[in-house]
Length: 510
View 1 (cartoon, rainbow, N blue to C red):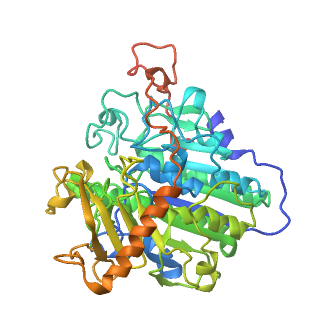
View 2 (view 1 turned 60 degrees about the vertical axis):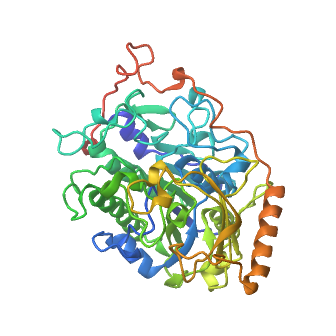
View 3 (view 1 turned 120 degrees about the vertical axis):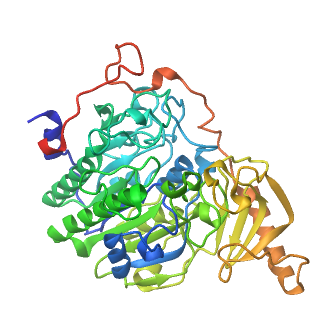
């Protein structure tokens, strides 16, 4: 057996014991998935039976938000329970040669749970920095094991990455000047370039082996499965290629749903379903510029890179067999709330920092109201002098600034396009999201109704309070780029980056 097989078979788990029986946590994070992409959220040709079943048996959210309309900021907030402004993961995203990353001083969910005796692992897309000698990899942020790509799978010359069938090329060109896409095992390169045909099956094998090993050692576990699906360019393994009537996007979505099903089955086969919490959501809205290959916002306005609802409101499902009562909730919630919620459920100590999330455990287990009543919308290009672009308070959402985005091109709505320049609104645009989730009808036009004046005043006061209380860390994404940081499995080879090739183990060998 090769070293990769041995790593899977003998994952090293921490010996720390636990005094009680805290729940296992499986956090499943999709990529660029829109609010309207799943069958259970209304898409007529999406076949997502496992997610639909999880929604039927768990709690499905209709007002769940991510904090960033692009990848890196949203992932920083998910793992820290803090707005990306506090960690400096703004504006935009990290690249293979980025100098910065999620600061090591930030405390992640993995670190919180590891301190409670959990074993921790991550599979999939990281996108929170690589840095010199792997400074910012997941293994430096509380994850004992990592199998995945340090950044987005379009941040490489993906036309050279073979998809299924073997004689076809992946759709799109992506970043032609970048190094070939690597797959890491912990802090070492396992494959370069990635074989998309077998990528997800390898992730699944790694995840299931980790779960089984944790159960054998009687340890609570935290698995963070950060999928590449359904980000452009879409791909799928042989098991799913050509199986969806929704085309290439549908195939990728079907494979993602298949992974959810395999993880559910693994938990049930091991008999730990009554002590395992599944959390599913996505990082930001769909990349509508890709047309049918970009995902769907459903009834919501615009998509990725905007602060309209389609950019930041996401599908979300939480499932815990026998613990969470099945249903649908319109209570307000966010990725920010995941860290304090799982910490409460695990009996773990919260980090001694300012958190922006709330503990939702009573909402999940008792059906109580959400402690969250407000949400703050940041654009990808955050300007500390300008602050948030929009604010939701209860059912009302106020836009102080609006701006279209390249990622949200091609839809009929001109407000979504890059030609919709940054515009300040004073008074703000105001929408009732309970009755108008598509943000069609500005309640303050042509004049401000008397009955809305107190609400508007309250919203403006809350915006000012939030702006004054926010401490903006120095930008990590603006620290510059160093081409020498781009990963290469043959560091002495030339010419780079085309010479960076490693042997690719087959999933059939595992």
